Image (cartoon, rainbow, N blue to C red; front, side, top):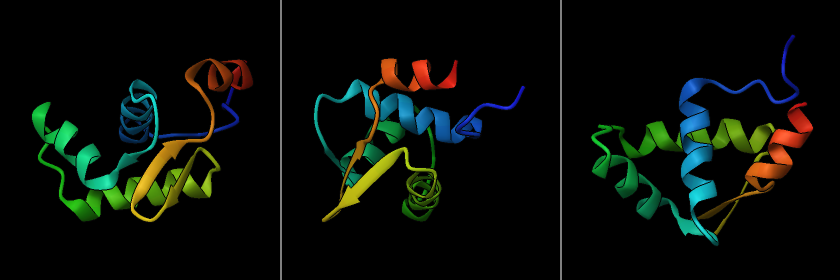
Length: 80
């Protein structure tokens, strides 16, 4: 069964980081979190994932700030 939001593993990782944040986060700070975890993503790589997630309606970006549209709980409920 295909989920409503068909996300890749990398996109899921981005969502997990966003859900761990209490509020919006700067894209540069988000990239730094991945670098701290050993991910060697470039800024453009993260931007590509964020663009895909934005197209799917899962994230919102404004003035280089990004946040999850749905909480982890809301997302899981929608996926059921």
